[in-house]
Structures are given as C-alpha cells and as structure tokens.
Length: 452
Ligand code: SAH
Ligand code: SF4
Ligand code: F3S
Image 1 (cartoon, protein in one colour):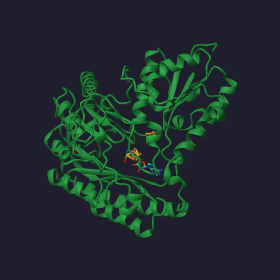
Image 2 (cartoon, helix red, strand yellow):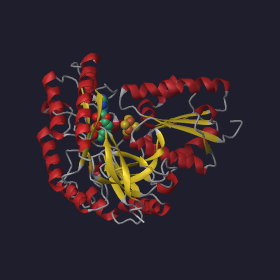
Image 3 (cartoon, protein in one colour):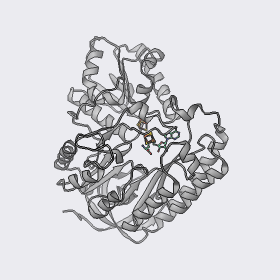
Image 4 (cartoon, helix red, strand yellow):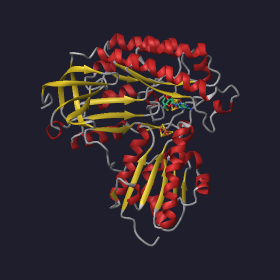
C-alpha cells in the first residue's frame, strides 16, 4: 500500500442485525481516524456489508462490487472489502470471482475489522470466515440515529428452517451477558438515546447458551428475565425486541410486556405459512393453531397490541389450497404489517434442491395476491388509530415534507405531524391522529414535551 486511506464508505444491504454490524464497523473506522463519505466513488475504503437471504439481495451485491472493481483498476490504492452474509457464504471463492477484493469477512468478524484492515494495509488479501467466539463489544458504534438504537442480545441461530441461509452464515447462537447488554443500554441512556431495540435472529433463544442455564429451556437467563433486568435503565423510555419465534414464544414474555411500561406493545412474530404441511416442510416446529393461540394470548393481555410478521409465498410444493391457508391466516389475524417474499432457493439449504419447485410466475402471482391482502388488512388496522391520541417518539423529518417531523407510535406505526425537528427530536409527543393510511398516520400534537 502506497498511501494511507483517509476516508471510507459503507453500504448496508441486509436486516437489522446487518445494520447493527455496519454501525459497529463504522465505529471502528472512526476510531482509526477515518472519515465517512456518502459516495463510494470518493472513498479510499469501500465496504459492502452484504445480505444473501434471497437471490436478488445477493445479485445486487455483485453489481455494486463490479463497479468498484473497475474503479480499482484505475485506482489501485482503493481498498475493497466485503463483509456480512454473502462474504460468509462465498468466502474464498469470492476472492477468485472478484480478484480486486482486499478483504472478505463474515459477520462474526465484524468487531475485528481493525485487525483485518491492518493485515490488508500490510499487503495481504484477507479472508476471515472461520467460526469464532464473537469478541465482546469493545467497539463504539457509529449509530445512524441519535434517538433509537439497536442492541444485539444474541448472535447466530440454531434453527434449521429448510429455506434459510442464516444459520449457515451467522453461525451458532451466542448470547451476550445481561450485564454487557445493560451496560450498553446505560451508555445509550447517558448519550440521550430514548429507544432501544434488542436484536436476535431468534431472540427467544436468548440465554440458552449462557453459563448457569439449563438445557431443558427452564434456564434462568431468558429474554423475559432480560427485559426485567434492563427495564429500569435511566433515560431509555422505550424497549422493543425482534425477532420472535412462535416455537419458543412464552406467555410469561407476554405478561412481562403487559407489565413493563417501557416495553412497547408491538410483537414481530414471523409465521412464514398458514398451512401445517408447509410449516412442517419448512421445519418451523409449530402449527398455525399454535400461532393463532399466541396471538389470542397476546390480545388477551394487551388487546391493542400491534402484530407484525414475515411470510413466504410459493415455498416448494405449496399448492393453491395451501397458499389459501396463508391468506386465511392473514385475513383472520389482521396484521398491522407483514414482510412478504416469494420463496428463493438458497445455496446450501435443504429446500433449494427439492424437485417440487414452483415456477417464478406462480410465486410472483401469489406474492402479489398476498401483498394486496396485507395492504387491505393494514389499512383496516390503521383505522383504529383515527381520532386517538398516540405517544410518538420523534426521530427525524418526514422525508417527503420537511415542515413535518416523523416518529413512531408505541405500536411502531410511522406518524407525521407539523413541527420543528430541532425542538422535537428525541421527545415523546402526544399526537391526535387525524389521517390514516395503510402503513402510516398523520396527526396534530396535543401535548408537547410529554417527557420533560
Ligand atoms: N429469524 C427470523 C427471520 C430471518 S430472515 C425468523 O425466524 O423468522 C427474514 C425473513 O426472510 C424470514 O422471516 C423469511 O420470511 C424470509 N426468508 C428467509 N429465507 C427466505 C428464502 N429462502 N426465500 C424467501 N424468503 C426468505
Ligand atoms: Fe432462519 Fe429459521 Fe433461524 Fe429464522 S429461525 S433465522 S428463519 S433458520
Ligand atoms: Fe441477510 Fe444476513 Fe440478515 S442474510 S437478512 S443480512 S442475517
């Protein structure tokens, strides 16, 4: 390397966990004295933090990478790094495919970025994809927001859903200690953050691997215990958590959410399919009846709770009738929001090599029908907010109207209202809802500064 890099760019392609990893990696680069730049074409270090959950996510990375590889041919000092789940999945072969790459690093290595970059600066091409024990956070993340923050509680996933790459690319479950999680939240509280989202791919698995836990699931470090443990962190007004798995979701957790005032009334519980045979083929470990019971129990304790989830259309072998069962579940539950996707065969997953794959046309058609129903139901759910007063935590501007600020209700609905961001950012404001749309609301503030 002839010149020392001065600035860096990161593009984040993936989920909340991928975003949280980017924030930690950006923190490391800041500590190394580098400056963040918006435009990758101005950067001395370009880092793509990638996602491979579906084929289109993976392909997007290659097109971005292709452009930077070209740039590197003219500018050999450019450092090109790829992190995250595509990096983990492809490893060495990515180096062969894009020889311009300097660094390929899996998600477990995010906290080691400084170390890895130093090897690159010494002239090596580095591939870091071996499974490791995740180094406890020694990093200071450079967070995108100064109001809301992610806090990892468990890395990895031990499930084996037959469609999913995550266990392969994120490795086995590794829980952080309650003390480390609380310490991070306390620091966030001191810095003025108001909302924390606790993160895990299967957050209900939290604590299973911690010392002092028992293998039968009745361990003392559970997500529920964690919520009680971190609930009183000063300064933090709201706590959220994701993602819940129906197989491990407990009534005790619902009771904790009902009891603990800072825990928001929003549950993100993917169901993937409303058909029991498909759920079985997916190896999800629950039935649609169990899923319905969970939602009923939530609504028994917290009648107004917002419910969101994820679903897949066109899983291998899914018949029209089985797909109808998914529509029926969506119809019956009435989700506030649902992330949907057409099934995408992923390398190294069991379902990818089954012979009963559906055509792209059938998958696209089902996805479209599902999305239509989701929008209708979300609009119905939004209507309950009309004329109500909701507590909104102000995060930023309405990107479409700078005279308005944007925040979220406790149920996680995006809400806009007229106001001055400089004055309102980070405040909890009581807002009377005057307009409702499927996925967002508009209102008028009725009581400013609810939290001062
Ligand atoms: N840990 C979470 C979700 C992780 S991935 C859970 O267990 O639910 C996020 C979502 O992507 C999944 O919920 C699923 O709906 C979707 N997904 C995962 N693999 C997929 C695939 N191969 N094709 C289409 N969608 C997929
Ligand atoms: Fe993937 Fe299943 Fe783990 Fe979720 S629980 S990350 S869908 S393997
Ligand atoms: Fe994607 Fe990896 Fe997240 S595959 S969804 S970035 S865990």
